[in-house]
Amino acid sequence: MVDWARFLTTAFTTIAPMLPPIIGVFAVVCALVLPMPRRGPRILQRQDSWRRFKDDARRVVMARAGNRCEGAVFLAWGRCSDAAVEADHIYPWSKYGPTTPRNGQALCTSHNRSKGAMRPPWWYVLSLERRRRSYFPPDADI
Ligand SMILES: [Zn+2]
Image 1 (tube, helix red, strand yellow):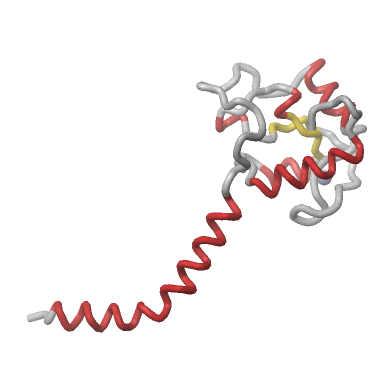
Image 2 (image 1 turned 120 degrees about the horizontal axis):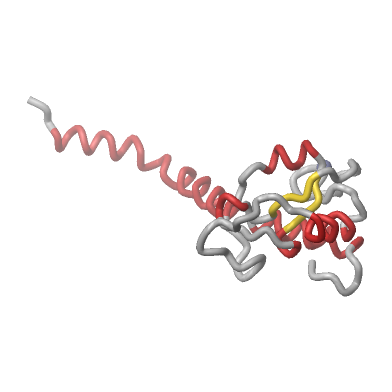
């Protein structure tokens, strides 16, 4: 016969001292993956019929970035020095981000591959905006 009261008491007294650090780590992870509130494109109800940026949209995205990758060197710092080869969705197409220049960024192959279908967290958006202030045309929407 299992003594449930004793089992639960033992389990609780074992786990209790570990709870504050576990909750702290959980809160930090949650804060790091939160999206940026009230920023970015209006999310569509369904996927845009075009996945790839083409012609004018692609030209706008590449030109305002000076045909240079807009990715960060390390997490949120610096700007990648590689040439941009792909126009990529900031908010991913697979998660209903629109294929418009407003939702586009110029990336090199390795940055595009590492971003994948990640929904951009707040710090990603802020660091992209900070970098863009230095090279976007003054009238462009960062
Ligand atoms: Zn890059």
